Amino acid sequence: MTAQPQLAHVAFQTRQFDAMLAWYDQVFGAKVVHQNPAMAFLSFDDEHHRFAVLNLELVAPGGPGHRC
Image 1: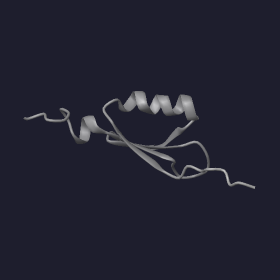
Image 2: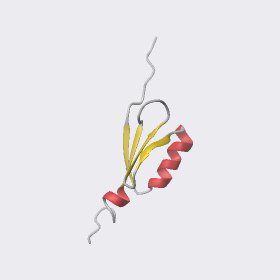
Image 3: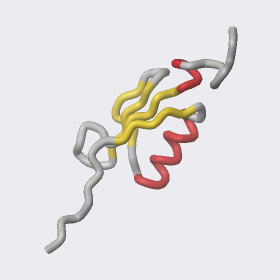
């Protein structure tokens, strides 16, 4: 018997934070288990989290090459 592949943890960085959380909810049924303005953790099972999403608009505002 061949073992089924499993997903442990995946982390993403995005400038579309809310849209990305909604997409993972819609596609994987992943619910936010912890969130603050800069980061969210999501899970679709009993694991504490499967996905982490970092909000680049807060941690790196302005985008690549932006100068203040």
